[in-house]
Image (cartoon, rainbow, N blue to C red; front, top):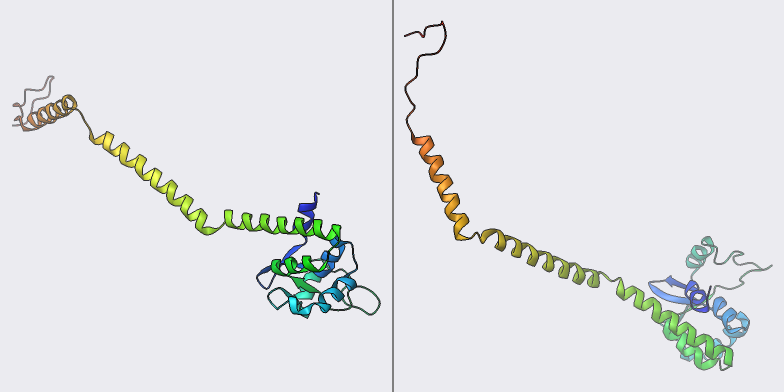
Length: 191
């Protein structure tokens, strides 16, 4: 799995936003989660609620059910506090705090991952699919109109032939019946 796919696998949707968790970021930046959280707390003014938020117990339990956090919260291991989640803007702000070469490279890759996800979402958006369907419908409509126009464009010779056939059929229907002949055979008709 390349680095971009690895990062994309660590992007979760929580509260309707694409976020990354502090634990995953610390792993990518090659620092401890504790040190990452301390850096954030020292610069808490840079992280308003739409940049970073702490997960609720129910959100954390939902992540734990999906095996993202296997140990849960415990005094004996696992996550001791509810983790922080960083939005794309929070990650950009975090890049200003961590200034190592690894952090800079990881931030570049994270931004690329978020851009890739955004592109996938816009490519599969209902509006784009609707415009594609509308184009297909208009092309189909145009083809049908051309087919019906060709169908209605009967040349004069064909039109004359059809009229002659209709006239002949009308004459055949209008002719009076010929008087009945005497049947052939030994049976005489009743009169």
